[in-house]
Structures are given as structure tokens and as C-alpha cells.
Image 1 (tube, rainbow over the protein chains, first blue to last red):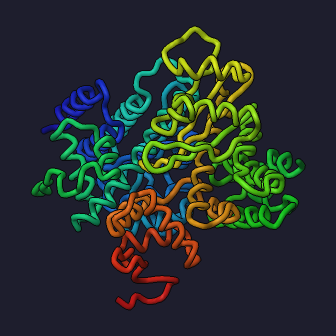
Image 2: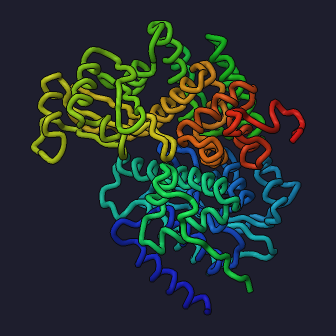
Length: 246
Length: 298
């Protein structure tokens, strides 16, 4: 599929998702996955600001521990933090050991094999609510078109959080953000239970949750809540098969 | 309150370093944060961790110092919440097993009466927030009849004109709710809105610390790093819930208690659980594996 077709399919998919009671974490996960495909990066993830302004991970193209750690470390420093605080995109920042800009983040990102990072602000009507973070293992810069596409996807992510509210009073926005962040916590709690029950890794635990939720037309967070309350046991979740990589 | 006024003028982490150290506990906060700021930023001009959050957390801790002296028993955080939010009263409802809610504390007589009212009626800001999301009625005298039809007139009779409820939760773990009221109608301003979420998360951490056998002394040091919990803590709580055949809430409390017991940070213990270096053994009801940094002997 060429990029244009992929983008159109992605936008249709997202528009289809953003109706009725959609699950914010699921939509942002889809967005992160499609971002990796569309923009030629190797990992993508969304960080949102809590009502007090702390950035927190909410969704990613990969749930592996190493990727999650790269988001966890970006509490006080990192491309997401700089992008969020400044409200401006960071593009094509090549990582190197001698770079002292992010002394905790950079070595860890390099250790994971990433060589460049980008961060696009999630902004609407003058308020930045988070950042879309992209990681790349291979060299080379993102083109201007790539950046436009990535920013467009970041804008869709912002709309997904704000749910078309016409009035953006602080309380409404804070409730939305707090709910999204709390949903991610529920999913992490469920992942832990599924891992312990079935012996799978965290990535597979998430994929099982997501697959079961989609198969049964249930919200991802709603299902995760049922797993945590033990209303549904891990072994009752649908199986999920890792797709064969090309 | 000189300390709080000084803090509002801080522009850089270097200035934070030179604040008067009014109490040993706050001194620890300053030292810790100053060290954290210094290690994370090369240039002194760059503040770390959102200047506003640092200030507001220090304000909370300062109020806790003051009110804990006045409330020698019980939970001072209600009085702290009301003062911090500049509202007329606050109450904290505690969620027990099932849907049962009890009053943990209230900041004054009116707050106590309002809490009793909503717990008796089973409707109101804390009741709703304990089960769902943040909620509010910014004008109890208003025409809307959709919610709290039994609660609203009684709350008005007690003097309240606006009420706000915030969940106190960690993911699917519900500790309870914070309820706040004002004697005049109107919404919270944007600063108050952020403050409410901040104090709700501090209350959650305080309840967790207390249920784990710790005290709010630990809280200051615990929040030294970040207000939000490491994702591994949530995964570990899920794992321990299965390992120990217990609820996720009990698992989180067990984790907190064990971390206190062996003198490590909660996130460090959680990391050990997630990498399967440490686990909770259901049969022996004990923690097994790497403890206190010693080599794994399993």
C-alpha cells in the first residue's frame, strides 16, 4: 500500500473509531501503530499531561518493557518534556553519547538501539495537552512530508482526548486527562495479572486484552477493569497469535 | 506563613536551595528536590518537574505540618484540603470492601454534616466520585433536577451552594473520594481544578501509606521523585494479586508495606517483582527472593 492509501485508510479507521463510546487508550494505540507504518519510524507513543502538568505515558506502538521504560524516564527530561513545555515540535534530533541535553533519557534510548527521536505537540486552541513521541533505529531524517503527517496524527490524537467538546473549560479538560491517565493504570494492573496467570510477557498480555476487547465489542478499559476485579479470568480471554513478520 | 510566600517567588532550583529550613521534614524535601533538580538540569535556569507542582506540593506539606500538630489523632488531610483549595470545607470518604463508604475525616462541622448526609442518602459528590469520575454541582440552587434530588435541598439547608467530588483511586483500585464545598455558587478556577487533582492524588498516597502501616512522614520523601507512580508498581500489583490470591488493592498495600519493611522505594520493589526476582508466596504468605539488595538464593 503506498503512503497515501495507507493514510486514507488510517484516517477512515480513526474516524470510524471516534464514534459513540470509544476507548481512548485503544484509539491512541491504533494511532501509534499506524504512525509507525506511515512515517517510517520504529516506535511511536503518546504522553499526556496530568491536570498538574506531569507527563505520563498512555499509549504506544509497542508494550515491551524497554519501550515503556523510555516513556517512564521522560518524567522530568526528554524530547516529550521539551516539546510539551515549549509547545513546539522537535524533529530529527539525532541521539549521541556526547549529547548532554537529556542525560537520563539519551543513554537508555541509545541502549535500545534508537538513533533519532522526534516529538510533536498535541495542541488545540492554544493549550498543549501532551506529545506524540517517535523513535527511529535507522539513520536519516524525516522529510517535511513525514513531519506534516506525524503532526496531523498528533492533532487527531488531541481531538480523540477532547471528544469534540466545544467548551474547553479547565475542569472538563482535566477530567478527560485524568480519566485517560487512570485508564492506562487500569491496563497496567490488568497486564500484571494476565502475565502472572498465563506466564506470557507484558506485550502479549496487552495484545490479548486488546484482541478480546475488539472481538467482543467491549471497551479496552472496561475489559481491563473486569480483569482487575476478577470478574473475568485471564484464561477466559481470547487467544492472540503474534502476526508472522515479513 | 513565610515559607509558602518564599516558595512562590522561586524561579530557579538554585533559589530553592537557599530557602530557610523551617522544619527537619521540609528540610528533607528541599534537599531531595534540590539534589534531583541539580542532577537533572545542567543549566540552573531550567526548572525541573513543573515549577507549579513543586510549589503546590510544598504548600501541601507545609499545611500538613501545621494541621498535624493541631489534629493529633485522625487524618489531618481534610483540613489541609479545605485550606489548600481555599474552600469552605472538605471531607474524605473511605471505600471499604464492596460498595460501602465510611467517613474518614471532615474538616469542620458543616463538612461533617454534609458527609453524613450523602452517606446516609447514598447520593452526592463523594458517593458519585467514589464509583466514577470527578463530579460537581456548581449551583445547588439551580433549576437542574437531574441528579441528587434528595441531597441537594438538604445540602442547601446546611449552607452549601457548590459541591465538588474527586475520586481517590489508583487505576481500578478505589480508595474513596474527596468532597469539597463552598458556601457560594460557581465553578472552581483553573488553578483550583489542578489543585484538586493534586491533593486527591496526595490523599491516595497517604491512605496507601497508612494502610500499609506507614505514616505520612514517609509521604514527603516518597513524593520526592514524582507524584505519579512508576508503571511497574501497577504491573507488580496485578502480579501480586494473582500470586497471593488477593485483590489488587490488597496487593498494592502489601507491596507498600514490604517496601517500607525492607527500606526500599516502592518502584524499586515493583521492579524486582516485575523482573521476577521477588514474588509473594501464597502458601507461606511471605515474600520470597531478593530482599534488601542481597543476592538471590533461590
